[in-house]
Image 1 (cartoon, rainbow, N blue to C red):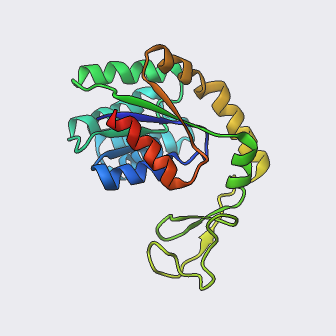
Image 2 (image 1 turned 90 degrees about the vertical axis):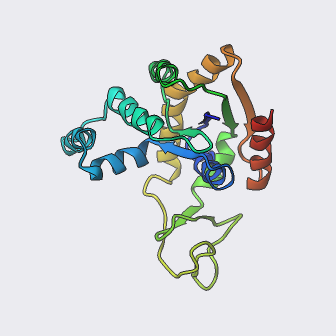
Length: 215
């Protein structure tokens, strides 16, 4: 089963993708992770990525599609989760063509709906363990008083992203609404879109996604 998780920055796509990886043996295809992995791989594609990034330029859609093709051809486990790609309508067209060429299908597109103001409150209170990336929130899941991460069981620095502030987040939201939100209509027209509340408790969101995947 191959799925896309859609939603603005901070909607919780990464958290839900990690859960699907752990429980369904799916493979998360995050654009950022793939680019970092390629850069360090030493392959021809990796050298192209490293060269582009060294020049401070944006990686082209062609390169990203090439990286996804490598993943699709390398084995699928329980299927793929596309997290952070596609971001634009041309990318959606390119992904659809690639899946067809690889004999794959896109089985579900899940939109994680959020309220902007609630999202701002959530993200500006967010911090992560510098060791394992576990996410904490000042309001709903504060950092343990003893400073020991509940996931990795070690005491490490807890950090906040430089762009996890209200002004930066609103700019990122505007970029999402301009470039990525048209995908909602695109996949709705293809009768592939399901929408859930992305700001509910993590367990509730997991159950909503599971219900969609179970049909």
